[in-house]
Each structure stands twice: as C-alpha cells, then as structure tokens.
Length: 131
Image (cartoon, rainbow, N blue to C red; front, side, top):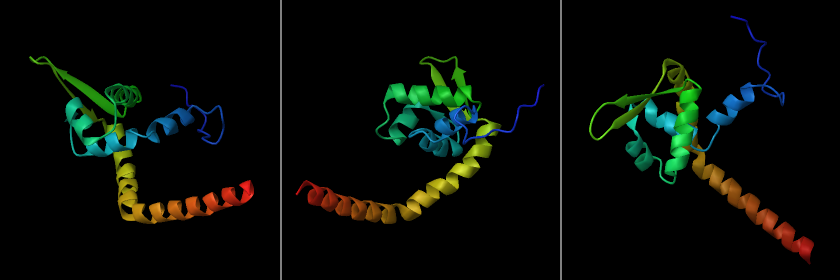
C-alpha cells in the first residue's frame, strides 16, 4: 500500500475536502448523532430528522456508506427491512460530533441573538445607503 501525502484541507485540490464537505453537510451531522444511539431504520431516521426529503436522506446515507462511516444491513424479510449503523470508523467520528451537538444545544440562543443584532444593524445600514 502506497502511503499518500499528508492531507492539506486548505488546498483546493486536496481529496480531504470531499470528506469535510460530507461531514459538514446539513444532514450528515444529524444522522451521525442518531446512529450513535444504535442502528436505525430509514423511516425512523426520517421521523427524527424533520425536514429531510427521502431523496436527500438516501443520498446522505449512501455517501456516508461509500466513505466507510455507515454500514447498511438488509434483512431478507417481508416486508424488507434495512438498518443503518455506524462502522468502527464512524464511531470514531461520532465521538467528535457529539460535543459539537452539545455546543449547539448550549449556545443556540446566543447565536440567535447575535444573528438578530447583526441583521438589525445591516438592515439599518442598507436603509441609510438607499436614502
């Protein structure tokens, strides 16, 4: 196995950018948090991650599976049953994601206040520029 050069995420051509894009995607973090609790069926994920479309859920799960973060297990039952779970690699990532989730829970109110303050200032700025 040939050892690759150390990733340079700040470089535009670095393949590690694809990983950052996947992990930083709108739905990936939420799905990873859910799967940390254990295997989940598609319907359960859909109900938990409100607002995600079936198409986007399927695409995100497929991308996570392709990257070795999630595994898909299909059961030969009627009706068919499919479960998704974290791989060992995904487990190492979920350890990093959970503190991020907690940070959001702990700080979302401060972020909303900051956004409102920013928006109010910039709304006034644009009104003054139009005058």
